[in-house]
Image (tube, rainbow, N blue to C red; front, side, top):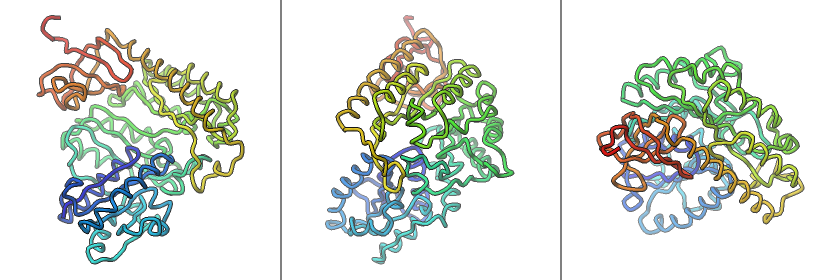
Amino acid sequence: MRFVIENFGCQMNDHDMEKMGSVLIDQGHLPGSMDDADIVIVNTCCIREKAEQKFYSLMGRLQHLRRKKGTILGVTGCIAQQEKESIFERLPFIDFSLGPSNIHRIAEAVENATGQVRTSAFGDDGCSPSLLIRPHNTRRGVKGYVTIMKGCNNFCSYCVVPYVRGREESRKSGDVLAEVREMAERGIVDVTLLGQNVNSYNNGNKDLSFPELLSGIDAIPGISRLRFVTSHPKDISPELIACFGTLRTLCESIHLPFQSGSDRILALMNRGYTSSEYLGKVEALKDRCPGIALTADCIVGFPGEEDGDFEATMRLMETVRFDGVFSFIYSARKSTAAAALTGRVPPAVAHERLSRFQKRQRAITLDSNRAMEGTRVEVLVEGQSKNSPDELSGRTRTGKIVNFRGDPGLVYKLVEVDIIKGYANSLRGELPDTPGR
């Protein structure tokens, strides 16, 4: 049978999707499209309300496939874990529902559905098997992702992750290193390590610490670029900061969510640091690795946020001058402590604050990109540009998109590119030996 997996959410969800695809391929199923699929799986995210709304909207549209073609429909991921058995009341037409720790049972769920038996699994008993699934090399290119841990122990007051992905559990470093070596042998040169809070990898264990794991991967022949997401500011150690500018492969970029610039709001969020402590970590990173690209997450309109709190957020943004920020209006999530807080910010006020924040951040990002004009950078060519079929597109070590004219034979190769123009979301480049220069 042919299958298709519709995905919502972050890179960790993308990787879970690849894992499920590998399990199904091992069982003889084939990837397909929505037009010819016998099996449709929707891998979900419930971190933000908008993603949840999109999921239920999609399921409404998919219901006709079940009625018209008898298509097997399944739900996996965070919404499955959050809703558990009640999801079958809201979506009575689905055949199975698996939480993120149980995706290793995807083939069993599909097999049961062919016998008209409904499958559900939402516990953490399958955590280790899910972590150990290695996707087939079905993704074209030279970039790869490795899950090094799952879950989170921080319990930020707004976040549902500990409830839907469980507590922290780290993979053994030997298994991670073996997987990266195998990827390098397949031609993967750009590796991203995944976890809800990679900085706490192996906390309390006798295995390698996160900085030691990075050093181990750095020594693997064939790997040129190493990244990781996501980092919690309170857990960034001096040893991790020292890795930047020291390890050959570790890219000069870090995603470091700050969420708010107000100490009062940070305390309500249970983030475990103050704004000055966050800025101290940023300063240490910049001192250690000048030119490091910093990206972040920010929540606007958290319960109790007043004008002064928002202004503190704006000041933090101006101080750091992030290369990019994913910013959102707060949305209450089931089971979280913040859902019970009073002092909800009126929607109009929250939207106005978000608009102001995003407008200023766009200007800062543009300034950052324009500052790269006249520099020469290393670009990993990923494929054809989305802007023009006559151009190539790739990324710098700092994660910035570069579009330039070049031979298609350069795809998946590392090349030097001169930056001639910075735009709001990308850079324009030229190969050094471009005729006519």
